[in-house]
Each structure stands twice: as structure tokens, then as C-alpha cells.
Length: 328
Image (cartoon, rainbow, N blue to C red):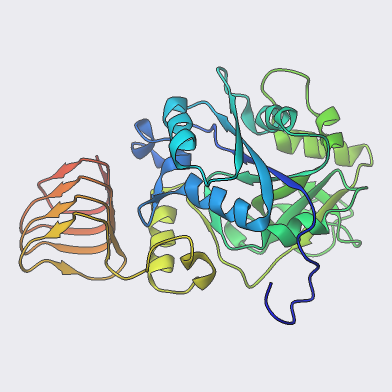
């Protein structure tokens, strides 16, 4: 804690959950072979970044659900989890959705509120502070911000969640967006069916209609990026490589543009025009030009090519120039 920081010391016990079972359909074809939770960000699997952030925030136990390519996630958790952080894996043979997944994760954790994160976001929001702001009488505490593309959560005059989606009659002010970060009370589980798939937004709406309180913490001045599409994934790298999010740099090696993994070789005359991240053991042929492009491990890019706004998948062999494309 920095000198003069008014926050209390981290004396609390925080459990956390990561919703990582999704199919990652918007990132296909990349997610046909890589689960969305393991998509690399500056060559580090996103799940590894989230776990490191939770450990720094004071989490002692983290539950992670799995479904799509579950064996890859399981292997990663076995070999690359931060030391000292207890990981509880909750496989889903049948995908349970946001509500069913949250119910399964809650069952793995002890009684009491827990922090929950979606596995397709990157943010520097202070997770410890969010956890400490949760009040016992709140069913959930949703972390919201102004992000026009996703703004659909309405607050009432008291700053509580009044509705999601269609504006409720008692809404006050413009809508905000859910960040994918929340603190969940055990009482939330009674609004979810005891088994099978369930939708969390539906449960929120039902709870609000019955008079339950969903609290909100509205944040600003932070870094936040959805990674759910190739365009958003590239934007995240542009922002990281531009140095505009120093709060996240500690979770990666020294950031430079281009960002190069170990064993990567660039041929003579290669030009990187900004926003370029190259994985490990990548080969780029002579006189090629790369701009706003992320290349995963062991890919091969032929000589004399131009790639712009592209994502090159693991081990891909690229022999033609491309723009605005996912290459696998």
C-alpha cells in the first residue's frame, strides 16, 4: 500500500471465481484449438494474468469452471498457477451458462461473498477495493462503467441496479455497462435453478422484480478491454503496446513495440509499423511488413508479405499478404 493510501490493510479473506467455460465463438477460428481463457495477451495466457491479479488482490482460493477444451485449461492450472494460490477446478460436461457456471463455482467455495470475473476481459480495476465495497445486504455488487457499446444496465436514484436491457420506469440517468466483475452473495444462489443451465441476467431480473437489492460500484479512469472478438483483441494489444495502461505492465515482461517472444527471428528488412506482438519461435521472412498484428507461437510468415490488422494463430504458415483477417 502506497504512503498516504487511505484504504485499510488487506486483512480480509477473499475467495474468487473465474467464468472460463465459454466456447469463445466470437474468436473463432482461433478458439477451435485454444480455449478463450488461454488466448495469449503479450504472449501470456489471459487466465494467467487474471490469476496473478487475484493473488495480488489478496485472494486465497480461486474456483475456475471448464468446458470447451477443458483439458488445456486443466493442464495450464496444474503447471502455471501462481504458487500459494489454491485452485479449485469445476468441470462442466454440459455447459451451464453464466448462471449455472456461477452456481457451480459458488459450490466449490466456502460460505460468504466471493469475487467473480469473466475470463474474456482485461482490466486494472482494483479488485481488492471492489471486494471490500460489497455490503452484506446486497445480493450482488456489479462493477459498472461507461462503455457506450455495452451500456445496458440502469440504476435508480439511490444508485442501485434497477434493470438490465429495457429501461425500467424508475431508472435514473443514462445506462452503464457491466465490466464482467462482480461480488456475489451466497443468497444469489436461491435465484438460480438447483441444476442445469441458467442465465445470470435472467436471475438478476427476477431478483430485482421481487425487491432484492443489486448494488453497483461505478468506476472510471481505469483500463478495461473486452477480448471477445479479433478486433477487440487487437485493440487490447494496441493499448498495451502504446504504454497507456501502466497498471497492467507488471504482469508482463518489459513492454516494447514490437513485442518479441523468445526464439523469434525477423529476417533482413522486416518492418514493424506499430501494434505488433510476436510470440515465441516465430519466423518472419525478409522484407515483410507487419502492422497492428499479433502472431502466436511458432507461426511462419513468408518473405515480402504485408500483414495489417491480423491475428496469426499458433503454428500457422502464412504465404500471402492479408488485412483484417484471422490466419490459422
